[in-house]
Image 1 (cartoon, rainbow, N blue to C red):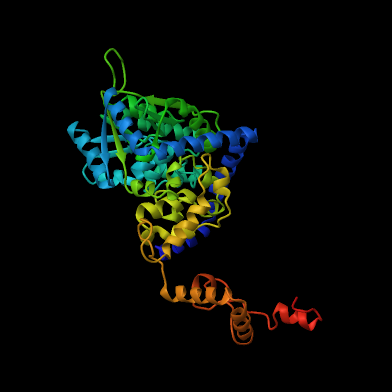
Image 2: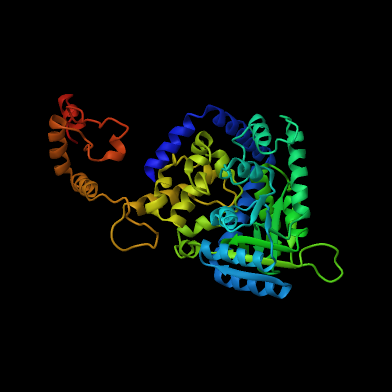
Length: 470
């Protein structure tokens, strides 16, 4: 993983066009977010409320999930539980086969990316059509989303125009953004007309009312949830909140942090399938609740804060590492600071633990997080877990990076530095014979020269200058 990560980082740093594209896009996002919160005190009050709502939801997660299932079922929404990605994919496939659906239209859903749902369904003969413009672009390019909110920000309009020309040669070539959007709309309109089933993510699932909240700007999410006969919603179990009156606070934080808007163009509250007398809407609504390691994260009182995330993307927009590398360098579904704390826990530290080191620990992510996730603290915790020994937490892959030689070196270092006499003796010897930092401590010396002690220590210099030890 670490070698592959280094290779992706090198490739990203060498792609000047991509870096320029994401810099322009993210600079605009940062400026819009700043303008959306002109009152600092109001922002901090909102963040306090958002943190309290998410903390309460996670503290009562089992009870709220039971309540959500009970109320969704009472509303006519069919609830499915999936412990693994394979189980979730199978449940979606079963629903589609039951309705003889040969095509699935999709709204934006990071959980579906986590599932690898597109590839799973396509391997079984079901066409999958992304209807979010950014998602459509990366699907046509055979890529993963670059950003959790703006999947194609790494591509400029000329690259999109060339992609459309290659995939839709019957369309007139244009580099105009509005014309490209209009072309995508015409293509997707025909897909919507023939769709039997649609799939979306969920921004928040409200336990009190059994309601699914979905926000978007393009209208494709509303089309996916109302035009087909069947709507399938997939989400992680952590997206539940307790009450409907908590939703406005979270929506305010989400939309302003994500896009700088007071509110998104569409706010969809899905409470049931089509009822008698209604003219549109699906006849079936299914909710697939995915665990995939979230219960294990929930069980750790400190790491549980990872699950507070409302997927606004603000941490990515402000992260100096993400801004320079972009999303594909991480090689995971969730990039940026979010991915650096979530992916090692979902996949295991042995597989994705290197992401915890892909951070400067500057704290920009936690400063802008609308629900105050302490990202640097969690990164340090995961780094420590990678080199920990013996029984302890339940983090997957714990101790995968532990090196017994380096552990022995640091135990020796601690033994020396906790006794003044030993410290003076050893530092005196090292000042004449060697480096302060042993060359075996490779994470430091891989990219730096090992520092050397000065020939004379401070106490000796003071004595030579006529100052006593006191």
